Each structure stands twice: as C-alpha cells, then as structure tokens.
Image (cartoon, rainbow, N blue to C red; front, side, top):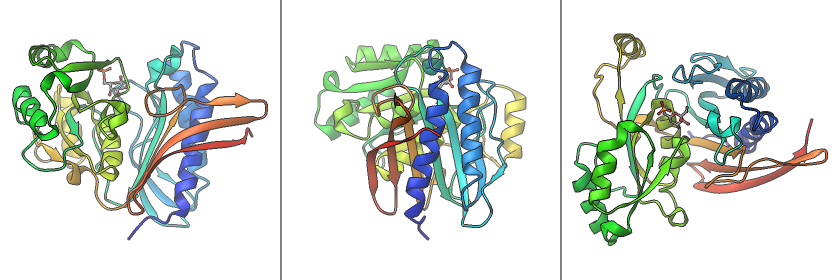
Length: 314
Ligand code: VTB
C-alpha cells in the first residue's frame, strides 16, 4: 500500500512549522531551547493529523536532547498507521551558533517499515551506486575508492568524500589523503552530509564515517527514494547501550544493515531548512509571513524536490 499523496503537504507543513519555531532561537547560543522549540512544535502539529502514528526514532539520548519519545503515539488515531522518525533540529550547534545547515527532519513510513534505531553511533557509507559489491562497509577505504573511481570513471583525485570532522576519523582521513581524494569535512549534520551523494550538483561522490545511528536511518529514508545506496552498522560502547539495543530487538549487534533492511515500503521524507545550507535555504520571515524550503521525497510517486512555501505566521 502506498502512503496517500495528501499527506505530503501535511508533513511538509509539520517540518516547516518546526523549522520556524526553532528559527526564532537561531544564534542564541542555546542548543536545548532551539531543539525544544522544534520538538514541541512537531509534537503538537503531529497530534492534529488524522493518522495513527508511532515514533520509532525520536530525539537522541546521544546529545541529551528533549525527546519525542520512542513509542509515543501521535495523531488523532483516525487514519492510517504510520511509523515516524524525527530529528526536529538536526544540527543543534548550527542553530545555536547561527551557522549554515540546521534542518528540521521527519520521515514517515507505513507501520513496521522503518528501523527503530538505538541512540548509538553508526558506521555509515553512502553513494549513488546501487549495484552490489562495488561499495561496501566491509571493504577497505582503498578498495572502495578504487571501485568508485572505476565505476564513475573519475580519477581518485577527482572524487570527493564527505565526512564528519572528528578525531575518530583520523585513520580514514589519512587513507583518503593518501589516495588524493578531495575532502568535504563537515562539523555536524550528517543527515545532510549523507544526502549530498544524491545529486551531481553537490559534488560529493561518497559519504562515510561514524555518526549518529538515528541520523543514519533518517538519511536512508531519503536515499532510498533517490535510488542511492546506504549501509550502516551500529557501534556500541557500553554494556548499557548493548542492553538497550537487545531490548529493542537487535539480535546481532555487529550486523551490517543494507538499505532495504533499514527502510522498506513507501515513505515520505521532509527536511526543512532552519538556516541555509547545501540542501535548502533557511527560514525567511517577511512581516506576518514566512518562507520555508523543504527537500521532500515520496517514494511511490517518485517525488524528489525542494518545495518553497510561503505562509502566514500563526
Ligand atoms: C552526527 C550529526 C549531528 O552528532 O550524527 C553527530 O548528524 C555525531 O555525534 O548533527 P558526535 O557529535 O558525537 O560526533 C551531531 O553532530 C549532533 O547531534
């Protein structure tokens, strides 16, 4: 069954309103407040929808943010059963410091089609290459780069890799430098980092490295509609994290997940800009109106576009 097209605008509206709520706190050096504003807006707007929704990915414990609780039921219950993944403010530092790239993100699937990811780190790899055995999380950096170079018919020095700028990536970064691959280092926001492989205009050929697990699932929802590839493997540091994952139903803690194991069936994905970034422009307020830009995908109707919306502030 497909998700009815009528929901597209409703979810665009939800991420747009959450983005607006957070926008008022941009540059206020308060990550928690900016996040809370987006969370509160999303929760109250989702509750108005005629859906029987369930949060499968909420705000992560990873950054100790206020949550839309995992398992929380939302909506009037008078409608289809949806699984919902949210990151009401992706890039809390961006919003707090008035930097580019803060987004408000929501992904929706039919019930039981969206992976309930634990709030741990995830090793990720994503490219536009759909074929199996070209790019793989289990291959060395060198093998992946050589394969990608051959597949795209681009020399390694003409390939660009996007990766979070973190000390934990020192080894990968050294490998990439040795191979003369161009780097696009991001300080935060790896949902949008992963999505830079979706279109040539972003000039990113591969996204890799370790970031948040929930962010990986959110990116996968959009990558699926763009017909790109994604693989992820959760990383657990503490026994507490492992226990939590087991309770959430993960049997093999070191499993490598393919895209279709993370997301299946129909989906709607919306990412609205709070501050302007690579994917979309940020919120713009003009008197009593605001303009938002949302990257939206709907799998069954092959919709992938940026929707610009001007509406009254209420
Ligand atoms: C990423 C990124 C987020 O956390 O998931 C990252 O997408 C991973 O965690 O925007 P570390 O900061 O601990 O490396 C964020 O940067 C913040 O939630």
